[in-house]
Image 1 (tube, rainbow, N blue to C red):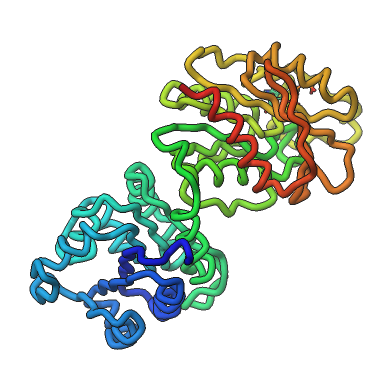
Image 2: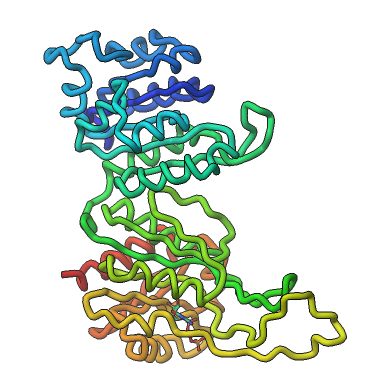
Length: 395
Ligand code: CTP
C-alpha cells in the first residue's frame, strides 16, 4: 500500500510547453496506485497528445464540457465530487487567472469550483510574467483560497533565459502529493505565523549588521505546519534558500519591519513560532550615503523591540527559540518567563553538526512543566517534535 493507493486524483493540464512533464507526472501517480483522471485545455493539446494520458491512466481524458463520458454525463461534477486531490500542472498565467476568478469557461475551473478537494497549482511561464503584478495578485487569491502553490523553480526557460518560471519537477510534485495524504492533520483550522532567517540592520547603503541564521529551521517548521493542515504566514528575513510552497510569504529586512508585519497579522492567528534570529540592536543614525572608512571607527546602536515579548494577546500560543552558547537550560527558562512563552526551543549553538546552516539540530524543549531533551535529528524531524508539543497548548 502507498499513500496514494485507491485515491482519486485529478490532473489538470493547461497550455504550456511544460505539459510534456505532466505525462511523466501522470505515470508516477498511476504507479503509486491512484485512480487518475486527466482534464486538458484545448491549448494543452497543442503541446501533448490526449492519447498519452489515456494510455497511462486507462481512463478517458476530458477536454470539454459536452463530452459526457461519465455516468452522470456531467463529467466535471462527477469527477469533482469523487476527487481526493486536484493538481493543476502546468498552470499558465491564463489558467491561474481563471481559477482565481472562478471563470469556468472550461472543465478545469468547473471541476475545481465543484470540488472540496485540496488543490495544488504548479505554475509554469516566463519569469517576468510570473512576477507581474497581475499574476502575483492572482497567486495571492489562490493562497487565500487555501490552494498549495508549488514552484515555479529557477532554471532554463523556453525563452533561453535562466529565471524562476519552470514547472516543479514531477518527482518533487509527487513528494508534495504524498505529503498531503501521509500526514496527520492535527493543525487543521489553525492559523500560524512562523518567522525565519536573519533580520538585517542597515548601517549605510553598503554595510549591514546581521547574523548567521540560514532560515532552515523556520522553513522546516512552516512546512510541517502546512502539512499538518495549518494555514501558515511565513515572515522571513534573509535566508540561504527560499524554497517553500503553500504558505503566505512576507519578506522583511529589519527587526522593526518584522515586528510591524507580525503585529498586522497576529490577531488573525492562533499561534506564533519565532525561529527568526532577530538583531537585538539597530543603527541609531540612518546614513543615506556610504560612510568613508576614515569616519567609520564606531557606530551608535539602539535597542530593537523584543518582538516575542511584546505580543501580549493571551489567546495566542507563543513558541520561541533560545540560541545559547552557555547555560542553555537556565537561559532558556529565563526567556520562557520573560517573553511569556508556552514553549522555548533551546539550542546550544556551539555543538558541531547542529544549529546555524546545518540540516540537523539538537534541541531541548523547555516549558513550564519541565524540559524534553531531544537527540540530534534532522530539522524536518525536530519541526514535528516541536509541533507535537505545541498542539497541547492550543485550545
Ligand atoms: N526575539 C524577538 N525579538 C528580538 C530578539 C529575539 O522576538 N528583538 C525572539 C527570537 O526570535 C527567539 C527568542 O526571541 O524566538 C530568543 O531569541 P535569542 O536571540 O535567543 O535571545 P534574545 O532575546 O535576543 O536574548 P540574548 O541575545 O541576550 O540571548
